[in-house]
Length: 314
Image (cartoon, rainbow, N blue to C red; front, side, top):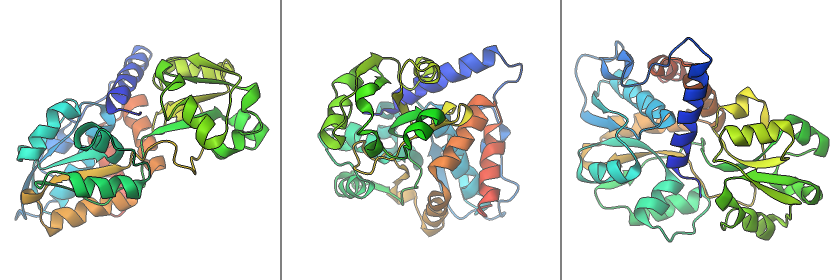
C-alpha cells in the first residue's frame, strides 16, 4: 500500500541528490514569504479565519500553499501551520480543531486513520466510506482528479515496443519481463499477487528495489527491469519521460488529493474555494509542480501562484 511516509522518503532523497549537483536552493513553504504573508490579492475584510496545515513532505506542503493563497485571495484570514509531521501527528490536531484544513489523500486517510481494515479501492467507494466513518467534527470536500498512488510504470521505449497504455496490455509480455519494486511488493495483496489475480500477469522475475526512488529509476532506465512500481507524481516520471500505465481494474486503491476540513471552521466561501481548486488539479498538473519544487528548486509560493493564475483561481 502506498503511504505518505514512502513519498516523504523519496522526496528527501530526490532533494538531497539534486542539491548535490545544483547551486540553486529550494525555498520551502515555511521559508517562503508567499504562504505566510498577506496575499496582495486579498480583500481587506476577512470572511472567516482558518489554520491550514500540511504533512512534512514537499508535495503536501505545496498543496497547502495553494490552499492558503486561494483562501487569502477570497478574504479569508489564514494562519499557516506547515510541515507538521506524519498523519499520526496532524490527524488528532485537525480532529479537535487545532488545524482547520489540510490536504489529504483519500485512500491513505481511510486505511491509516479511519478504517484500517477497509478494502475500498475506487474513488467513489473510498469517499463513501470516509463520509460514513469520519468523526463528526470532520468532513472531506470534493476529490481532485489528481492522484499520488502506486502505478506500473515503464520506459517510453517499452511502451512503444509493446503498444502499452494500460496494465492489461502487459498480459502477453509479462512472462519475458522482470518487475521491480520495494521488497514488500512481492507479497502484498496489491503487489505481484494482485497483478496476477486481477490482470493475469506472471512476470519472469522480481527485483527488490526501493520505494519509487533512485534505485527504481536506475533499474528501469538501464533495462535491468522492464516495469516497476512508481508513485504517479514522482518527478522522474516527467524528467526521465517514463509512462505510467492506466489501472482500469482499480488494483491500486484511489489516492485522490482531497481537502480534509474541521467542520466548525468552514463556510461557503472556504468550501467553494477549495472545491474549485480540486476541480482543476490533475495528476499531470501536480506532477509538473512537484518537478518544479523538488527537481528544479523553485519557490513553493511562486509555483502555487502560477497554478492558481493559470486556472483562473486567483
